[in-house]
Image (cartoon, protein in one colour):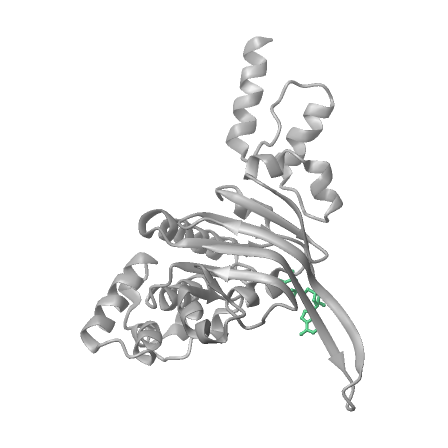
Length: 284
Ligand code: ADP
Ligand code: MG
């Protein structure tokens, strides 16, 4: 679905005469490979290059060096711009900037209408998309009155209605309360599981990547770590080095193991830690 080969992005700042004032390397030879239908998370602290990568996936930026293919199409190929944008839908941090209509169903129908989908088909897509994000009963509501999590799900429905093969979500939960965060995550996982949409979830919350198929950790514009969530969560010291906030349950398990308790590496959830401790006490 996505392949980046030695992808480099430099933000170049120029003065009024056009002389280069500064160069910021935001992506530094990034290599990633994302299979169709997978749920991939991209982690990294602020400034690590995540949003720059997201913008490349949607061709809001093009490579300074290296290449990026989305569904086999080279993003440097100007003729493919609209095809690529329809292949990879984007969801951003702030739902308020993504919702434009005054009624939920109109907002969701806006994208398909814009690309000339026939009216009957638009209504079908609107209904299917709102059902897929669990917001069908709010179809005639005003988006203003919805919670942050509900608004974000409407924004996701708007993207789903465009029937992209892949959805890129750039910190979609950053502005939400814990309930909203859970709603959005559940929705995204459901879309991946039931509709086979490739999901690329960009986040700085490690807890959100537990169910991903594969995880990339970025630092200073490079891929610093990659692997399954369990492989990543096993490397607590490396994660700290890359300024990631390791979930408390993973930290606790790591500390207990360091103190000599026989606990497996890469504990992801509270349930797993409880099971591991129960096994120990049964043995003892
Ligand atoms: P993240 O999304 O992980 O926080 P970004 O991709 O936004 O990271 O930023 C990566 C680096 O590029 C940062 O050092 C940031 O300051 C810089 N950067 C981002 N956008 C611009 C821009 N428009 N002009 C110059 N530098 C930028
Ligand atoms: Mg960002």
